[in-house]
Image (cartoon, rainbow, N blue to C red; front, top):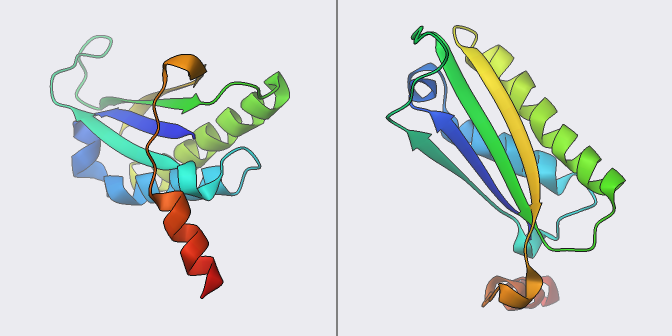
Length: 131
């Protein structure tokens, strides 16, 4: 954990390299104490159908959701979310300056008893470290 989803308006695709945004957010998450590297997943979802405010085509949105395992204190969750949002805001200022973006973020705790995780990556990383 965590699983980070970057949902965004489709007009962001024409303004910047969305994979570079994913990479920047992923790196920012790794630089925080919260996520183990083997559990971190970051992905983007473009929304083709949307309308923002009065429909001005310069408007865009980015909504970041970080789903994490339970047990982190409020301060840890707050600093983690702030890091993701700050990274995104800085990236967009440089790479999508023509868009007027509504940026939002949320940390959600996963209901642990109702989550199944079958992760081969942890074992693979342990093997890589032994080489």
